[in-house]
Image (tube, rainbow, N blue to C red; front, side):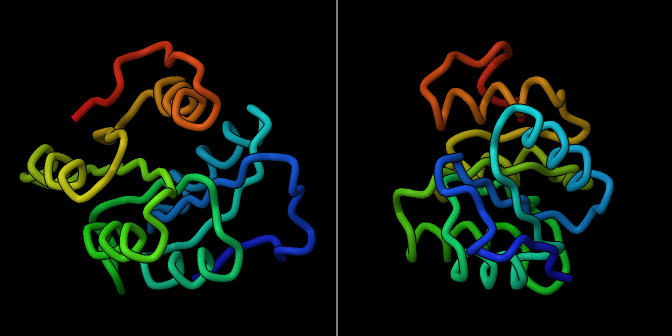
Length: 144
């Protein structure tokens, strides 16, 4: 399921963030926090929809879950790296029994920050600020 704001309606002066996660609640809470922090945010419920959305309106930063239907996060990260090497990626995962391993692989594939679910919302927003604005994050760079 693709949830988005049309590209022509996005505020070009604000940094654009794309959230890709199959959990509606995670997308909702991240969206609210990031919009409150001044970012323009769009969403997608899986990797395939996320890549479609990214190709329609390139984001400055992508936050992607690792384990999702349709197209999982590792494949999504690899495709984003290939198509847009300068786009920053933050990976998140609840990851079942291999969550930390998934996040370590995500870093090797190009994620600049990683967070294990449940994550600190302030930590993720701080990491976004650090990556996009050069501001120091209030918490460690990732919680893998």
